[in-house]
Length: 271
Length: 344
Image (cartoon, rainbow over all chains, first blue to last red; front, side, top):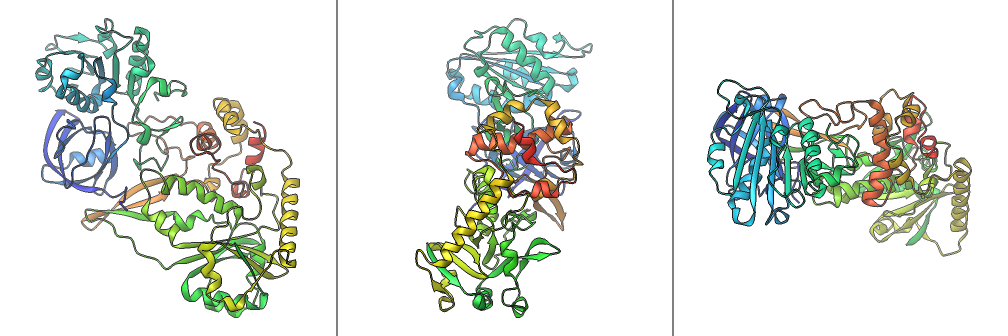
């Protein structure tokens, strides 16, 4: 019987600094981890603990995978001390994937905030890999300052992809910034897709999720079509330890992505 | 189920035979409390029925889950994978109805889902369970409110009743070997035998005692009632007022299964340990960025009731409580779960 708590070794083969405190790690696991966009992996930083992260690369290429991680706690701080060639542990994939079959033929309206663009990148790349299946893809992304934008070198390339429409905002601008200034909801005043049938996908800090979700509902999006990445304390990753309980759900098993219809009756879901 | 009587004069001999093959744990009384004890040959040199009195008492202080789902155990290592040791087969001789019912909770979570806990399953497979009657329920017992009885509803591998100092043993197919290894010490009982009649009389008396202790049944839709009350902070505050957050109720609970995985550096690698956790702990649900959906204790207090009596019932068709009474016996704040649920 396999041991769900046992990580497999994975080698860091490359790192890329996205912002002063967000870095992308490219990992090569000893065995392929068969994740699909939306699922997550528990990453072990040897001697410093374990934390859940959603891969940010395409599930159509899995011999290596990327994780874009913000330095916030003990494990992530220790991870930032590692370099290419160092080994970490990984176990997974865990949780549920995005139901891409339900997205087919529709407009996909993706809203990200800060490092929340990391898991959305895996979805975005999966969508553009089979772009003919979807109507259009909108990406709305907000960061605190221009320096805090992740994937700066990739965004111009993504904008060139047919059927993809990208718009950005920052809370605080500088003299170089030519786009909108304000929280990400300032990009949502005119949503250029059919709200009744379109799919919305949101990931970011809880307060941002709360307001973006409300804006989507006000615009007419169906609760069953709004996919939200819920942040909870996940330890085991396999639906046993109960740390990640959110109302009737265990986000590690039932999520981490849940629809607004699933969580709307939970008191203060965006805490 | 085959039913046998083991005369009190043969008990030590049978236990000696068991010890040759198994690690045998029995309940013993220590300063009026019942605790589990690993039987040793020298214990059998005492009075032949010295361990019988504790079999008539209620469940041991330590929940039976601790044998299968240890409070702390290694579950992984890195970079080399962890290989667990193989332990000697065990017999838990004298678990109670409330404890075997509680193991069903762990079976569902650790043994039946998409991801199974190989350590739990190995210990479960390695352990024979003998369920002893509770002829003398105490004031803290309330298994009757959960639809259970003070004697085995689920036999496990064998059922034990102490009748006039002799041991009446009912064995299922999986427990047949317990009798077979010393069949000469047992006498098979026929239906209608005086021992079985006396056992049934004891069981009836125990049930009557429990029904007199816990007279008022709970709301038949307890799951719905708890869910509806969840945001009533005043209600939960009233009941949580005397809690000192010692977590005794959670550590003693035979159904609680929350755990935490933590890593410790060792030489050039890491050992990963799975340790019991407590949902009353302030940091229990706190995320890396610092946000905490249950920062106030009253929310954690209500969450415990929601988990046991609403979510688990909805998800698995049973309450995560078996009425063992350990929570109220251990509570320094004198919080009685029966009183809380009785008001719903």
